[in-house]
Structure formats: C-alpha cells, structure tokens
Image 1 (tube, rainbow, N blue to C red):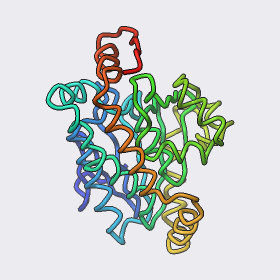
Image 2 (cartoon, rainbow, N blue to C red):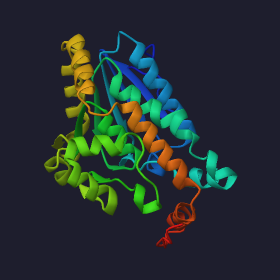
Image 3 (tube, helix red, strand yellow):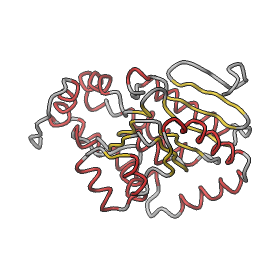
Image 4 (cartoon, one colour):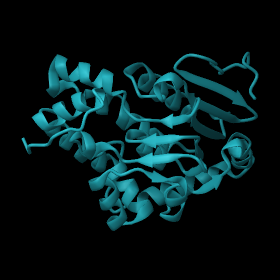
Length: 272
C-alpha cells in the first residue's frame, strides 16, 4: 500500500492514484456504479496517464478497479443524456477521452499491467487490451457489449481483440456480444494470468514490482517494436472506430437500445 501522503499520490476521488517504489496504481473508483466511465472519470484517467507517462520516476503502472468490477464501460446514463442533448456530438468523448487513454496506455515508455478484478466490458476491455500485461481474477467476466446497444467497438478493441484472440474469435465476440469467463479469456489469449480473486492484489503488485525493477528502456523499445509490427497503425484504427460510432450514434437503433438498456428491457433493432 502506498503512503497516502507521498508526493504524486492522490487517494480518493473517482480515480484513486497511489505511488510506491516506482509503481503507480490507478484505481477506477466508482464502485457503486461498476466504475462506469463518466466524463469526470475519463478526464481524470486521461490526465493521470499522461502524467505518469512523462514521469521518469514511474517505472511501472497498474490499472485496476475498486469493488467488484474492473469497469463496466461507458456510463450509459450519462451517454443517454448526451444523446438527448445532441446525438451527433455525443461521441466527442472518443477524441477527448477514449482515444488519448488508449494511445497513452499503448505507447507510454514503461510497462502497464491491467489487474482485472471483476466485470470488464465495452471500452474497459479495450483499455485492458491496450495494457502490456493482464492479470485476472478467476471470478472476472468479460463482454464486448457494443453491438448489444447498436454500436461498433471503440478504444482500439476492433484491432486489439483480433490480435489477441484471432480474427474469427474476435468476430464472434463482437457480433454476438455474449459474456465470457476469465477461463475462456485466458484460453483465447485475452486474459493472461488468471489467479484466485483473493490473490489478485498481491499478485498484481508483485508483477508490477518485478517490472519496475527490470530493464525499463528495453521494455520501452519492445513496446515500440510490437506497435510497429501492427499492419495498421493504432491511430488509424481509432479514427475508423470513431467515424463508425459517429454514424451509428444518430441511428434510431442505437438510441432506443440505450433507452432499453437503462429500462432493463430488450432492445428491438429495425436497421435504421
């Protein structure tokens, strides 16, 4: 546990930031709402990631969630309000928040560990796959979620999921949007190491400490080399996703599906 008074730490708030021994742990901290991503939380995460990426004293980063969930993805109540205010502008959050978050996770010159303590859905799955390593509680559940509300993926998921699990499996998971377990995620190359839920915190801390004590310059070069091996640059993937979501955001299918989700009803898609 980091000392709450340590310089650079910011315990509490929607994003809990703690530093100890070269490791910064970022905890999404809205446990009563599944750590759903509001504008406030997304901005805090974006800015914190930019800060740790630039801080040479930070040698490894852990991203996790408070409570029973890693993150359920976008807070759909806030998204519904944005749609009512102006559907064409509701997706400005991709350029303002999601894309910078994913880009920084993927490109910062130090290793990032996703400690997936529970539900990991939608954009959160994109965040986890943008991290370098994933360690997962055996009780965690995953879902792509996007097509269930009439959207295409964001947060780089359309590329990172295919890279991790293969194109055929990624198509199945995105098109059908059915949840899957930690064991399945590990089998398909998505989850990485799976540990008993009670052991996740210590195991993630030990992994981050190992990375922080390791050759961080070599890790940075390895990240650059892995990124260069992608057939399509991450920026292009994010731009394609954003354009697709902008088109889908003004459709009746998406807007009624969000309303149905919030009402705990089954959406009906009419293809318009």
